[in-house]
Image 1: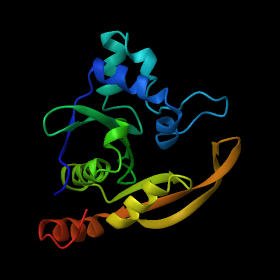
Image 2: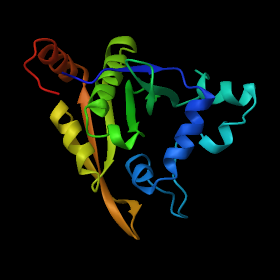
Image 3: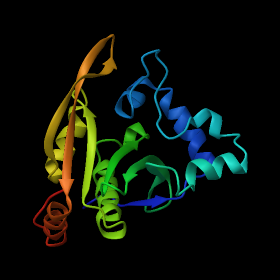
Image 4: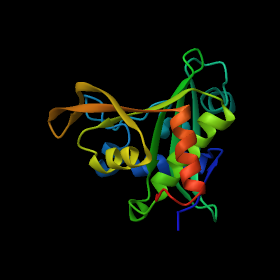
Length: 198
């Protein structure tokens, strides 16, 4: 049975939890990694600063549709409403694509299908709700679990960014994996027919 998730609006409590999760090097390395000066990276906003942000600052980060590229940030919750992670889409409407990033921050729930369920929910949003043409991810080569998951879902290797990620005192490649709308249609049909295991 597939783990069920819900993509929901971000709350201040969620942001505080993200900031706490990112203090764990294992988690930050699976998310956006670390900046070259060592701090955990987080695109779109700085969790620690957003905890006490004004309403105007909050709206600018989480509800500004005019920012280009538009970044859609959502909390990942279990079917029972428990906050377990974050999903982000960097949407380029002119190109008709979205870069997808998913983090399951609760370590005891990692590798239990929640990441896969979140990616499928995001793909559904990208292709069915937003009507975009392409979804893509940038995965560091050392995150083999993530690469295996995306490839299992049908993402195709599109290129390699050489030594783009600092990690453990060295530079590592990352891979660009993509999925097109017609490929998602096939994935969606195979999931609904039960012929694709996730």
